[in-house]
Amino acid sequence: MSRTALGALIADTAPIRFLTVEQYLFFRDVGLYGLATDGHRDPSFNGEQAFRNKLFADLLVTTGVLPGCRWYRPVPPHAL
Image (cartoon, rainbow, N blue to C red; front, side, top):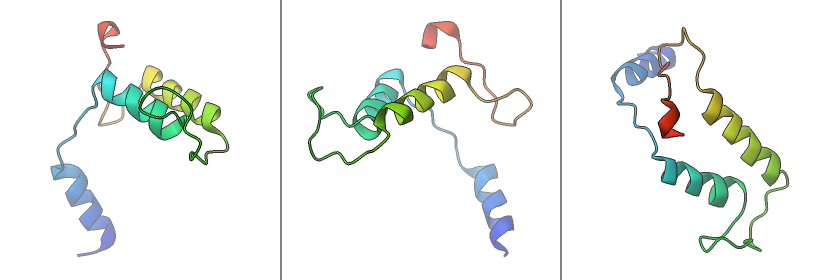
């Protein structure tokens, strides 16, 4: 099976799991922005563009996926 065919098979059968708002905020703040789990700056974080990454993640989450994409699911306003 070719790599493309395998990727299509996995994409068609893999369940899509969504993050809760709390999970997303934790990922954004700790993983992309460099905060420790207590909310303070993590001195071991080595991200050069942390603020840019945080803003870009927020842009992607709040705008959603474009209609017409097979994974398009409108986000209800109360979920933001």
